[in-house]
Length: 184
Image 1 (tube, rainbow, N blue to C red):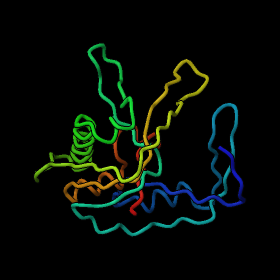
Image 2: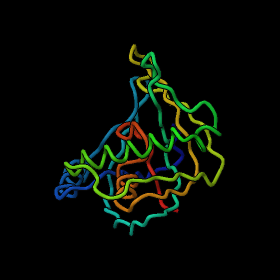
Image 3: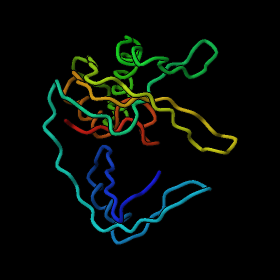
């Protein structure tokens, strides 16, 4: 990561609860935080915290992937398998199925009950996906490489699942920064 400015704007997205604003304010307000790995680090001083109003979620919405969207399945040897080509990511039925299952799992985890509406998902890529290979825990024995894809796309899904995708991320490994979306 190369920083070319004195100021950085950082957006964090997650499913909000009643205590979210108080928690975020307490963690970051008037504080310094550090990001990096064991080889390089940078410190930031928080100047401002702003909670953005949620959009109006509809069945069909257009998004831009701000960070790579990762989706995988386990093969017969329990290895994680990612889309091998841009075409597979954009069009494979298994990718759409895994994205839907992931959103339904997040919904159940957040609300404590299964989604009751009609569950459907159509994922239509608008721009050519760009492949991104991200190394997690670089230089350690736990080093892992994760493939994700960046693109603009249309997502057709129930508004409740659109909210889950927008606020918690689309695909897998969202807590590690994958699948962050912005509305186009």
